[in-house]
Length: 310
Length: 218
Image (cartoon, rainbow over the protein chains, first blue to last red):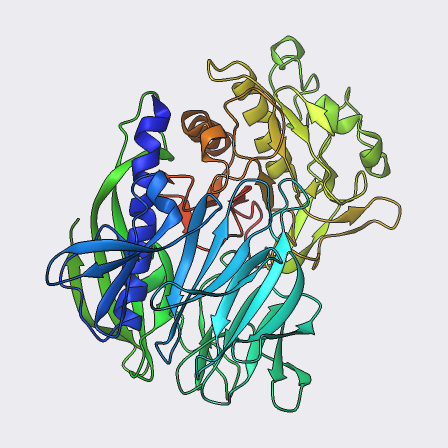
C-alpha cells in the first residue's frame, strides 16, 4: 500500500522544484502551480509528466491553446530528470537514468530529434551562456551510501560534437555569463576554468552560485549553512539571510535580470499524523502550498511574497 | 548515581558510555573502564563544516540494531564522533531492534575521520563538506526487502520503505539532540528537523546532525 501513496507524490516534488525553474527560465509567467515539469521554448511548453511512473520516461510538447500534448522524446531508460532548455532556446537537455545503468545526458532539438546522448554517468550539467556548449559532471554512488563520488568534468560542443575533459572531478558547476568562465567546486575549493585559454585557477570562493553580474555568490553544498558572500570581499553579506532562509525548502536561486535578488521557495506539506509519541519526522502526504519570496540583497529584506496552491 | 543494579545492561557502570564503546579496541587509547565510571572525554571544536574533534570515541562496528558500513574507507578511520553522537546511534539501534518495523539492522555510514594511533580526529575529509567535528553521521534509507544494503530512493523507489525510514529517523531524534536531518526530495519525509536536498547528494543516504553538546564557542 505504501507504494501507491508514494509514487504519485514523487512527481509533485519535481513539479514544485521545476516550477521555480520555469519561472526563472521562461519569460512566460506561470500563474498557477503546475503539476507537470514544464519548460517553455519559443512560446511552446515542453514538459515531462512525472506524476505517473510510466510518464516519467517522456518529454512532451504541449500546445497551450488546445491543451494537446505530444511526446517528442522517450527515454529507453526509466526516468528523465533535470530537464532544461539552452539559453539560445535551440536545444533541450535532460538526464535519463535507471537503477543500474549509467546516466545519459541527452541533448535534443525542439522537435525531439536526438542530437547527442552522452553515456558517461552524468549527474549534473549546465549550459554555456550562448547555449551552444554544455558542461557536466560525471560520477556515481560507488560507495553504497557515501553519496555521490565524482570522477570527471567535461565540456561538450554541440556543433562539433567534441568532448573535452577539463577537470578530474567536481561536485557543483556553473558556467557564468559575467566572465564566460566555468566555476566548479571540489574539495572545499572553487576553481575557475577559462574555456578559451583552457586554463584553470583556484579561487577563494566557497560556492559557485553567482549572481548574474558576479558580485555575489551563495554556498553550494546542502550540508553547509546557507549564506550569501560578496565576491569582492569574500565575506558574508548578512547573518539575517540565514535566519530568513532557514525554512527554505530548496536552496534559493538568483533571479535573472534582477542583479541581486534571490527567489526563495518554502513548501508547506501535509504531514501524516503522529502514531506514537512526539514525532519530529513524518511522512509527507501531499503539498498544501508553495510560498515564494523575492529577497533583495542590498535592501536586506523580502520585497515580494506570494503563495501558489496545487 | 543510581545503584549498580539499576544500570542498564549495556552500560553497567552507569557512566553514560556503553560497555561496547568502552571495550572497543579503537578506544583503548582513552583507557576507559566498563566497571568504573568515566567522564566523557570527547570535545567538538569549531563547527561541523570547519572544525575538529578532541578525544574522539569510535563507534563499535556493529551493535544492537545497527551495523557500520565502510564503503571505500578503512576500518576504524571513518567512524569517530562525540559521545552524544555515539549514544544516539546506539540508542536508536536498540529502539529500532525492538520496533515492529525492524527487519534488518540500520546502516550507519560515515561519522568523522580519525586515527587512534596518531590521535588526530576530525577536520576536512574528502568528499564531505562537513563531518568535521564528530557531530554528524550518514545513514542508509531502509529497504523493504529485508536486505542489509544500500538504497537509492530516486532510482530504486520500489525498494524504499518510507514508513520504516520515518520510524528510524524518529528513533534517532528521540535518542539525541538532532538539529537537522538532510534528506533526498525523493525520501518524502518532512518535519521541523528535516531539510530537503534537491541535488542528488542525499539520494542514497540521509545526513543527521546533532547539537554541539559543549556549545559552539570552542
